Amino acid sequence: QSPATADNQNENNNYEQIIEAILFAAGRVVAEQELMIALEMSQEKIENIINKMQIRYEKSGIQIIKVEKGYQMCSCLLYTSPSPRDGL
Image (cartoon, rainbow, N blue to C red; front, side):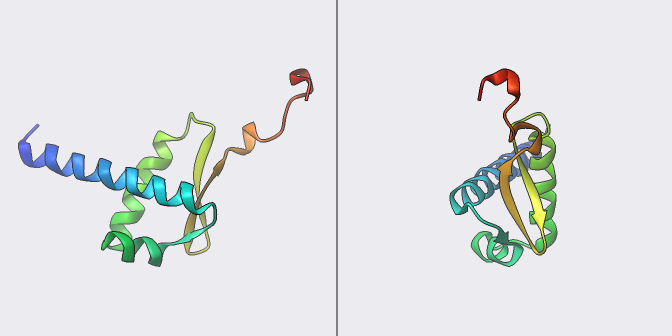
């Protein structure tokens, strides 16, 4: 992989970490516009990064969901209700 490709991948990873931190800390729906302003980034690029994050989270207990014109980090529905066998 070329140095330019590696730099772009590192930059995207940094943006993923920043978006993850924003969504986690907010605890609410964060409007796309807020992310666009905070990251000085186009809507399309934010959508692409979040789509990659959603794929990464597919086998996780958390997910990023699209809500109207924004995104929210939340637990997966599969893991939100305790099972009777859990004794809860």
